[in-house]
Image (cartoon, rainbow, N blue to C red; front, side, top):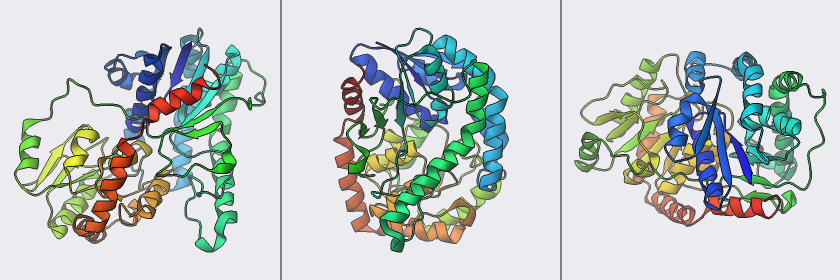
Length: 410
């Protein structure tokens, strides 16, 4: 079968789909990944066929800047503006790239264009999410509104799913209308097929499988991409880790900042207050490349190599990064900036493998320093993190996803 996998996101939101593509290819399918050009090396470096589209995710993120400083209304406005700027051309490019496909597959980022393109081609579209998006359930709160008071119980959790789904629909309604117009499709989409599966690339040990979702919706385990076998760690980073107590790692991935110098000052003060050594990952402009005797600054380092060697990890709570931190078996401190990140921070805390999350807009050096001290010194937390990491490593998320998909459409 010819399968087109669409992934339009930051690196943490693209990498799992590379792993899934490799799994599909391993059982004999002809797989093409469709992403922006900036991820070409990531995709082709693992031997997956790649078609590039208009747009540059990293440039757009850096240009928007200041994810922590923007309120949700301004953030959504910027997202809509960026989508509208390229969607017309992108939809035509995807239509051409997927012209011979028997099946299109992707998550939220891919579905905006992928679902109408699949309708135009007359082939199935399969949702493959990195977040727990779906019908309302009482098993856990909605991905965009996880702060449901305990007293509201299952009714509140179901309601937060309704709010999440409404927010997503509102956010992308204009973009989907633009794509449908460009593809000469009717204004209203076809009714989604009920016989198609939905895949979820995270673990049921982190987010439970809701019984009321039915058998076609499957939480498979994480879609983990092995490190490039040709990658070699920087010798000075290897030396830094080896010449003292295990350091912590602090990095906010694709979360850019309008003032990376100020955020770096905050982080360095927190490291000093906690009395720990640290590896800082500069990411897409979130932190300045400035360290010290007890602080090593690095760029892009594979999480599956780095995280297991650490005392704790501080990250932004993206779905992919959260999975990597949980699999590593070390405690995590989540500093959520926006979107689904507060949800993943709440799961880390609920599992007892990290303290309560520290929202970026409320972050101070004192709060981060206190959380670092607690995470490094809490032996029961370390034992829980180790145990969960081992259980997650034993899962085969890609294999389960491929098998589940085969049971419906392959």
